[in-house]
Image (cartoon, rainbow, N blue to C red):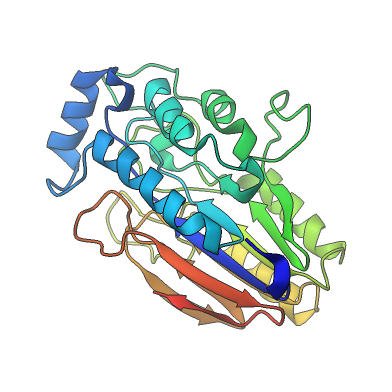
Length: 288
């Protein structure tokens, strides 16, 4: 995109592709996943990949960056991860960022094995994660920090819980990521920047009475870090972008903007993506 409007950031947001059975591998697992858990109005893996390519090609020239907020696959199979990554390749990798969702990392019993771990996700999407020659050598991969445009900084987070079954919907940032977020904000290195946090799980979801709790377990701590940062002017503005619940919504709490992206995989969601624009002072508008 032309940088003439350097004081404004335009983003294309997608989440929850749930790309099922892509690559022709593990068809039994994909069929079981769709039969047991998913809305029959879900797109097939092939339909999802075709639509993904079309949306990216159409809107990429008009935006500054493309964000994908996890659940890019439905079962976390390596073939699914690679199929989605392949659909994104050929574009400028510096203009695309992704984070994992619970479906990308979790396991579906009894058919799956341990191949769908974070290392497989990182290898498939390495070019769309944090840059650098040593990016695949450490599990200390998140949070990653990218300056995606002057005055706009992206922080990518991993809210998945490694080794959990696929029906365990809850997420967690964990102590290490929360500490690093706190250090990042306390450094005041981004006091003149608009911070965008990309995460899969919904930090606004309310805890239910019965499991599974479709929540971010440490959401309160995460949000309090952001609220305190704004109060202490550690950032010009803060926006949190997420998916997981498949619904589109916007909420502003104590000055922090929260944007939930609709589920890309579901036919009923029209459009199945979101576009937003953030100005230099943090003002946000778009299609919700």
